[in-house]
Image (cartoon, rainbow, N blue to C red; front, side):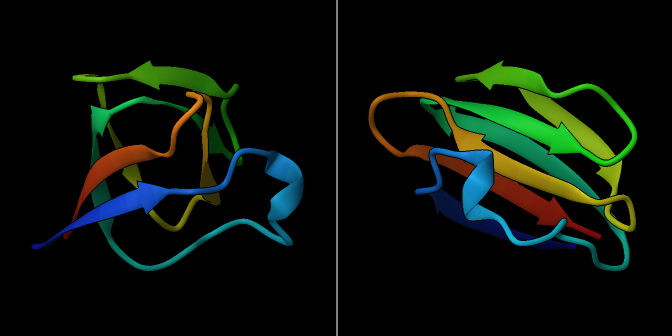
Length: 78
């Protein structure tokens, strides 16, 4: 497993050129702020501080900060 902390600076889906995809599975935890979690096969869901998600990384995914300031998240990739 590879844990890392990330600042989500993107505030619009339009800033992405394509889905993010890679091997493995991922756990996502919102440390601060709020994000919109987009996936290729499911409806977007807004996650707030303390919320989490677990998903297959081969499915396209992307994050957008929905809070005024950039959101902070913890990713753990396996």
